[in-house]
Length: 557
Image (cartoon, rainbow, N blue to C red):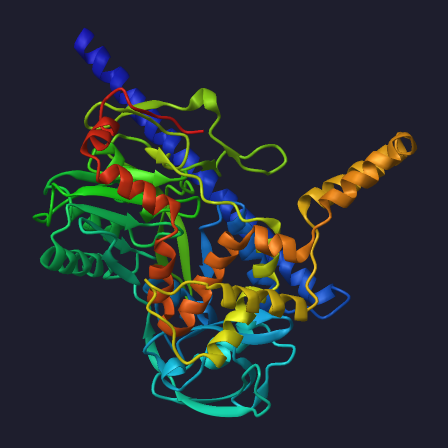
């Protein structure tokens, strides 16, 4: 009798549960249908009665985009006309002339021609000003407008009219567009006799193969005992490429990352599945605040598995996984479907988009909710967003003068002038800014009537204004004037004072004119504080071993 009663109770609970699920689903479906009907009738009323003509296509796209923005920045609607740009972002491939363009002082300028692609092969140089594309003037065009004109079907010509600074005669070039495939590994080489270096700029399809090839060549030719993998400012990309890159350095079967979503099909554990290339080489991963997503998978997995050390600054904190879904009319939805968790169990997502503040802003995980985890060897690590480095190294902060010289294109323009007046320079490893080159730069800056205001100067001016309002200024007028005079920039003095950092910027820009992206990266390596710190630690076995001890604490700030 008791057994029958128990069975009856269980049956009632199951039926009630199914009924509640069905009721909840019915309520949800009704809410969806109701609101879609309201949306349709509202739009119909707008289209019929709004005082001005409306653009239905634009209005609906705006409503879609605003709806998705309310979820998170990574869930996006991709209409058919934006598919080319989407493919470029996800594959690194497009058809065009192979050059970066920018707007400088109201003109569209070639910032960087890619080595080996149509623009460079047709003699186009950085600094050349684009006046017309396909017979259309670029005046009043945006960089996006000009970029769209330069892109098009592969093997089809496009005519570009240009002006080269320092030359009066305009010139016209017919360029045959090619399929442009950006290198995921723009540079690799040796930092010293024992330390290899690989720069990975994105996680596009096949990038793990490029890393594998680069490492195998370094190993075959130089037998490095240490390797620096540079992921700074790498925004991420394909998760599987990150898994494959980790697999180069960890044994098959090792867990690299897990994903968890609302729908069970997005729950997955990604393991190293192939035999590794090298499980003993000392590894350093370089990151900064712009290293995100797949970059953070590698940095976090290296840390959690105690396979390598992370150098630099705390990473971006993007632990969300996106999946692309096909929509009608050749459009797509890129939707966040899961969060990813690195081997220790940490999720490195920094912002909580599902629990917004009352004002609609997004908060990060509070310190009270930050949890403690341990690495494979027992070191303590923390979640809370992003991957905190094992060895923090803050980047060098530029002076206001250097920042303004870059922002106002004086560094860029001088490199253009220099390259147009000097056919060759020394190799990237050997080229240096000499006294003569730097004196020429000072003269160039003066000729352009450059002046600037320092942060100190702004601060003293604001202090004087506050003191005037509070009626303290008159009693200390002489002191204020003396301090203002002392803090007023003197251009040539400051150009001499900040020569080391300005010379680095000039050196990188000038080298890029002759040796392109690879040369610029190689030139910057010698003065890179993060690389230098990584070399110092990797090449000192005692120091290196100390970082892997369990008592080492890596705490998020």
